Length: 339
Ligand SMILES: O=P(O)(O)OC[C@H]1O[C@](O)(CO)[C@@H](O)[C@@H]1O
Image (cartoon, rainbow, N blue to C red; front, top):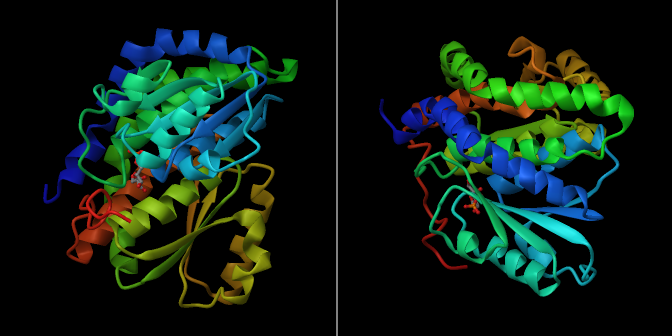
């Protein structure tokens, strides 16, 4: 196809399968170690930060475990991070992002146990972390992250849901999620085949729009964050802003005019009550809404929503860039310009 990102979308099922077969037993060992910590930090930047948001929210539904999420430099400059019985899962596709490397080094100074989850076996984070998980995406050229995103998100879910300190009534959900992870390669393959045409059609309809708001609740907020920050802005070169669904009426409601498209991600989480109310409000107003319902794409546990919805969104973004004659995988400044 025209751009490399096309092949990288297609390679996602294989990447998921290889990561599971190479790293699953080691991720179970990491889970055992992390069960013992009083606190878990999930750290990363950009697309990697978005996987931390989603995994934390998913776990928060069924566990009391104390988990905090930070982007690299917010962690690095946080004066309250102290020596404590804590572990950090540091996510980075490249394993070289300066912010995340700084967070890794700072964790080690504070005696926080570090695990790097990255796609590059020879990177700085692999060399310096106490333990490692290598996602098996192979080199990814598209800056917004497709196969590196799904494998990283899967690794976080696998580690966190394999821990054993869950409430009794949560055991069923934990089992279901771990079972769904096993099926991810084939589910993803089906979604890739089924949603390309739809993504292209939607992209044609929205190709001239310049600004998009992206809303979600629970684990879908993480995906809304990725959608805005990396998929729209870095991939399709469109302005975009992520929001919690519950924040709709605290600002965007005043701007929800007919000319501003809003992408809603919905998985019927308790917080999606606010997503539904916002969708209905926008329907009445005639806003250009784009609604992605988890149940239209998959019958997995709703906590798996980011895995299901990211595939149709990847096609949408791929063709949105293509209709505007942009390579969705290209980078203009990231990694080239010092700032
Ligand atoms: O996951 P890494 O390699 O640390 O990279 C972070 C970078 O990747 C992106 O998330 C793009 O995928 C950027 O937003 C960010 O600068």
